[in-house]
Image (cartoon, one colour):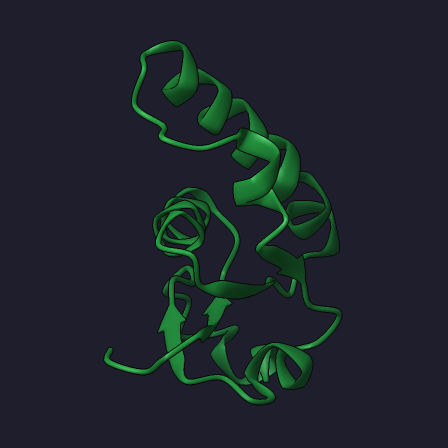
Length: 102
């Protein structure tokens, strides 16, 4: 991903949140989206808890809040994708609901 600086992550479950942490720790700007508003709203809290656990285990080389500042909750998939250099998909595989996702 040479030269990429804006990452769109679609899906804010466990895997999407994990990718958000990885990319944000790599100093990328992360746009996180999930079609379930409740999941999206809880994503930053879950990320903070995971980062704090990493910090307690001496696995972070920067402040938790600095990592979180690189993550933005996108209000729509279009907002997340706008200007993205890389798109990472981590959604539940639901063939019946896939057409309702977009």
